[in-house]
Length: 90
Image 1 (cartoon, rainbow, N blue to C red):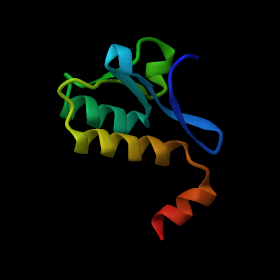
Image 2: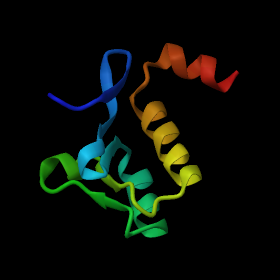
Image 3: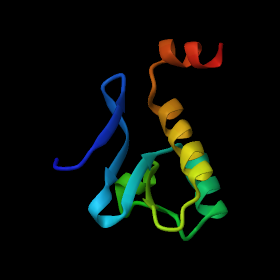
């Protein structure tokens, strides 16, 4: 789709639109609410049904590296198959 995406178990957990300075992470509803509350200028639910299902837009300008890292880990854990999650926790 002309932009990089990041997958685990064949499923997308994050995408990047570098020319637009934007990204997207796939979060749980609770994680999405947490990140939006923590940094509303950086995180916003994607409009429509995708956002209601946890897809969260990330404005890269002004975003701190550590919070992006936390969002990517949360998105990976939300998307990864159980067999990989067990290896993560060990």
